[in-house]
Image 1: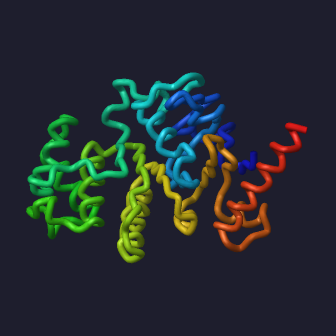
Image 2: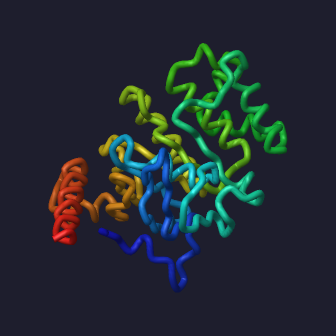
Length: 257
């Protein structure tokens, strides 16, 4: 598997936010994640990329502790994934916005603030952080797709998580809204939040400092956009990913022989 120095945590480097070893997950009687080992660096935006059905969502569910695993270990911020100490420290935004259409934006976010036990002021801060101050009293059912995604993001931010896991947050959005949302992610990263963002759109990889490339439940590469281009001699990240896939298939065929 292609790796970069970014997943080496030794010496003076800080401990990883996510530390996964030998992860195995079965869904519907079939392997969904196969012997996956990876560590995610603190403070960066890490892109989890690969085609639909490759195991991205399953891996994210393992990290937030909502997926039964068949083997291996998943440690998040020094604790087993999904354990009580992580409740306020990990935020999760699913593909479908987790908001109530018949409530206003501010009411949705205040509801999640109450669940987390945070102050009412945290709701206002989260709404400002995602750029929805002008829509705070709008009913979520009347929001656009991009605004609904940001409202859902505000609900996840209300606990001020150290790790934010976002499952294909830009799917279905037009290019302008996608750029706007990535600006929000970059702002969060600058404030110290670690982000893990999944996508099947390869051009979004350039927004990430670190990349995890998956296919058929396997991690094919842990690298950076520039290193991926260098290792594959490709200028296009999409072509670079296809090159990694072809090399992996060739290596698998050689092992079988």
